[in-house]
Length: 137
Image 1 (tube, rainbow, N blue to C red):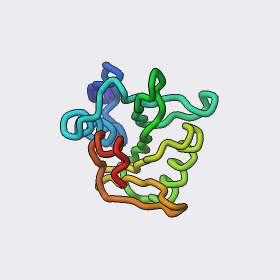
Image 2 (image 1 turned 180 degrees about the vertical axis):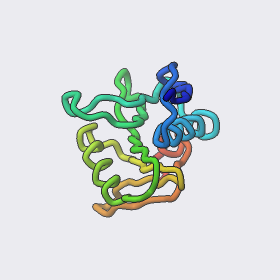
Image 3 (image 1 turned 120 degrees about the horizontal axis):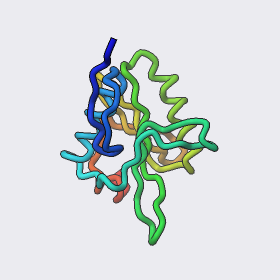
């Protein structure tokens, strides 16, 4: 059986057409085309924690000459177990140096999280890159 493929604009290659990959590719298109995320500051399937794990999407911000993670995104095919996905994303966040924002994305939608005064907050969308930079929250 031959799987169809999707084109990943960040990795500049074709990737297998799976339910999770469809979520990731749709989100990447929205991030670049509608939310003004700089293509050059987005990483896909970046290795973290000594290369043992990979974060689906990481978005960086420039600090002087350095790049630091601003946002990580965990993509899932469906919203079946959001609590487990949240724990997974929280673990990735810790391994990435605690970027201020993290998201869970699935076919039914996206939720962006941040911590404010030791309380987790969230919104049911992904804000534009410029708003994340301004820490709109």
